[in-house]
Image (tube, rainbow, N blue to C red):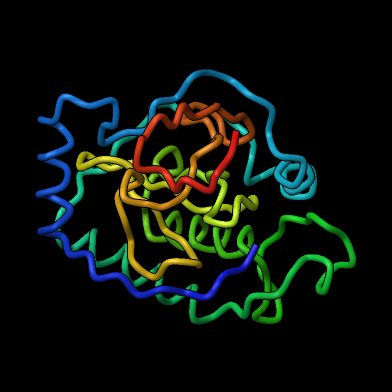
Length: 205
C-alpha cells in the first residue's frame, strides 16, 4: 500500500473557498462524508486492537468536529510532512512476513497503516480529540486498498495521506472512500457512501 508521493499545493484559503463552494453547491458531494451505518472493522485493525487495547477501548463522549483555524491547519500539514519523512515505505510482507499487520512504526519503516496510526497518535498527543481522527480505508488510483487519516473539522473532512503530500478535503482526493472508524467508538467502523461523479474512473465496485 505504498505509492510515490505527489506534491499538490493546497492552502488554507483554498480550503475555505472549497468548503464554501461545497456547502452552497446543489450536488451530492458535501464537505463531510456520507456515512451509511455500521460495518465490519478491517482484520488488521481488529488485530491491532487486540494487541493495543488502550488504543481502542472506551466510547467517545461526543463526536467532536474541530474548529479549524490557520494555526491548526498548519499543524496538520506539519504533522503529515513530519511522519511522511520519518517512515520509509515497506510492505507488511517485507517487515512481518504477512499480508496485513497493523502496528505503530518501529525502525523507521512501515506501510500505509503505520503512517496513519502514527499521525493519529501524534495529533492525539498534541491535544486533538480522538473522535475527530479517524482511520479510513479507501481504494486508491490502482483500485488497491489503502489507509488514510480523516480529520473532522468545521470546514469539512480533510485527509492526511502518505501517497499525496498535500492535506486535502476528502472530496478533492482521487480515492474511493469505503469505510472509517466510528466517531462514537475507536474499535467500531462505519461504511461510507462515496457517490462522487469525479471519482477516478478506473475504480470499480
